[in-house]
Length: 71
Image (tube, rainbow, N blue to C red; front, side, top):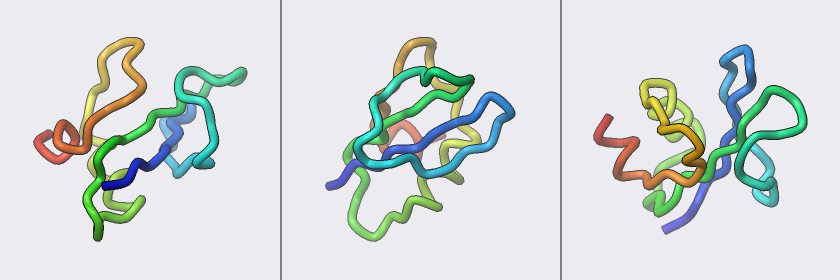
């Protein structure tokens, strides 16, 4: 199982973040999320597609893949 870092910009654009990025709000208007326990074979694009339909709770920046894939 792996973790994938993604970044949601203030304008709504979602992209892969650097793997060493700190989770949470950035100095700009972006927020970095860490998606945990991503199974082998699931790509960053798959994670981003699943995240687009997911509404994260306030101040929760580490999200289990199972929560995304169920959304």
